[in-house]
Image (cartoon, rainbow, N blue to C red; front, side, top):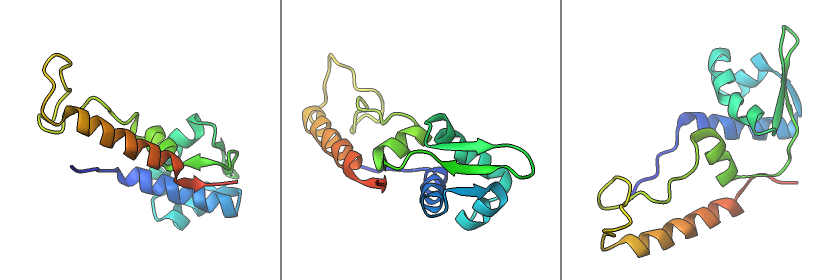
Length: 127
């Protein structure tokens, strides 16, 4: 089993944590503080803005402001990377066909549910 998260997810976590200590930050300052370019910062921040956790102001004096103070690791991963697929077969590496379950199907579903529940409990930000 392998879990691969994008660099964008790590940067989004850094951005949220940075904004939690300084709730309004200029884009160029935030990019420097989380270790990315200003151009890539907009890609990192877009899912956070779409989720309503952060607001952005455009223009030379624009920046980002934290709006949501409670975000779980599962919320962050799904906002940045999309929903965690729960029907992916661990043996076949593709969608598990419902008619021909593999030998690990039920065990793997249980493990996925446990992982998802655990990720839901890990705060990236907490009130």
